[in-house]
Image 1 (cartoon, rainbow, N blue to C red):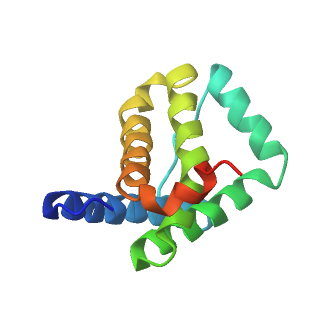
Image 2: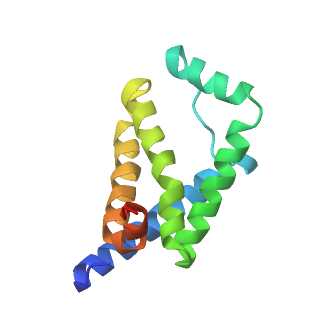
Length: 131
């Protein structure tokens, strides 16, 4: 991570915020304490297809909770970021293409994940090393 104090503070704040967001929404997938709006049209068809698989949403929520715990505890932050990368990209693309009303939140979680990956780029240097 960059050495500046401001960068460390910003990365810590973003890490905790993303961790809390994904912990709450991950747990909500199992406990249902937050009502989720009904979706229609292409967004509803897409979500219905994923739900119809029977496995996708439980698996997704387990990975959201796992990533949240990793970010909130500070253990294996790089792994937590790597897990959230494709999840947050999909959230953003879903809202950009199918349910535009959620674009702000989709952008926040996706950009937050990109920011964390950049702030912790040292944890990813090995995957960009040519053999």
